[in-house]
Length: 210
Image 1 (spheres, rainbow, N blue to C red):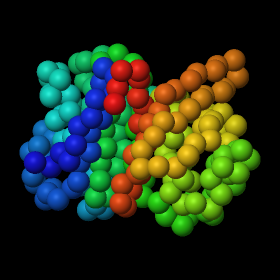
Image 2: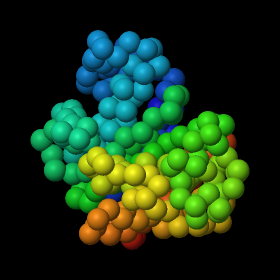
Image 3: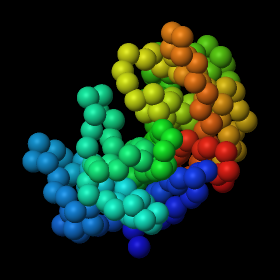
Image 4: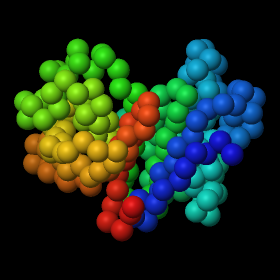
């Protein structure tokens, strides 16, 4: 079974997929063909695996999957259904989240040295002071900001100023205090993270979830 795990997140769920299939297998599982303008083999597998994972996830909750659409900001939605979804991938892993009504965001990243190079441009002074040069902790901060951006669902947000993550003690899993501060908008987002051997996942977690 390609789905590695499914976890409850307070009325919804998130799931993880490790890509081991050929493109033809993922095309069958996702009920879609990858667009011709995506030419890189790994990108094609990620595209298909994301849709296969979303299909498997929502169908486990009794939702009929007929494909995805995107709004004018590029945010994905289910066709013919009002529930909320989010996707992320870093080959060979793909993550997806679903909730029947509330906005969600999920992000999966593999800690890489390039985070150290861009840290000062995407993290606040407080976030940098808390993370230091710890690559895994920086990766969690990065994922959390990506999740907040996906929850907001629009553009024109600065990672340093508008997306804030409170300090935390690093463990193999934990809670994060996420906030979106843009003009008159102040939105708090309950987040959780998981640290695996070679990647990190951050996702929305509403009360009542794991």
